[in-house]
Image 1 (tube, helix red, strand yellow):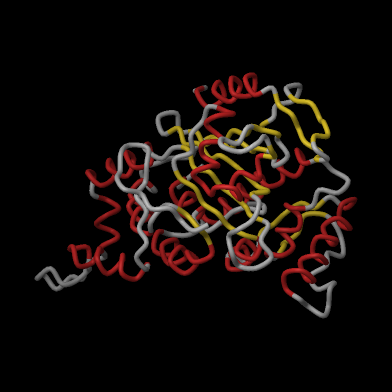
Image 2 (tube, rainbow, N blue to C red; image 1 turned 135 degrees about the vertical axis):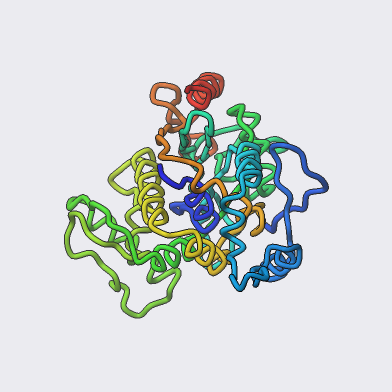
Length: 346
């Protein structure tokens, strides 16, 4: 996919219901990112103070500092090194009724970047997976974040699936709908047989989240390929009734790819402005400057192939009721093996 880094920067503005506070990091090594808690404006000011600010170089020409960053070969190399060090990015969607970020992670998608192979891999982990949560009893995978934030969720992924996320991006329902609206909506092919399911989620959202009097605001009147606003697109990616969680996870990955295509239409200046305007809609352990430092790789990357996977894999789990919960009990060893093969494949 062309301009993957643009998509990566956009992911700091997404995810997914389709997708507690950020923990601090005491140091940095390859594969980790340092958390910066200072306000975004201070980060930008500091960068400009260090010589990135534009101005007259004595020739009467005013230069764009971002242009300098974009084309300097050493910085492009650094950008690839930085991306290579955070190749596993966990995209999380929380089912929060307000603009907060607490709640169960009902959407979990691992985004894996293979720079050498020019491949982007998306792996969905279903929320009802019955797994071992370190320090707690076995439970659904979507409970790990509630119990101990990203650090515990990371350990849970390591323990059960043998993969360690390097960075994370969290968004809630409201954040996703606002971001899609700011993009001007997205075109989606809605199954005519599922319009009532989409509208049922819109009804719930209008009542529980927005508190509207008109609970049918934004209802779809027909199926087919059409432009959806944020609320409608979120409902399309979210509904599950009459379908399985596997089908919902596939729609969520599809929505991510649709948003990628919208992001690719932006130039670098538009993308940075979009990120700065929407950064408060997400939680992430990537700082603004770390995101911007990835920008030089935008033009250096060509189109990347996108591959998809879902955990649990068909034939590697059983549906059971445990302690009154309907869960998916996976063969963890088999799923970890298949995931490892998928991520290692060229």
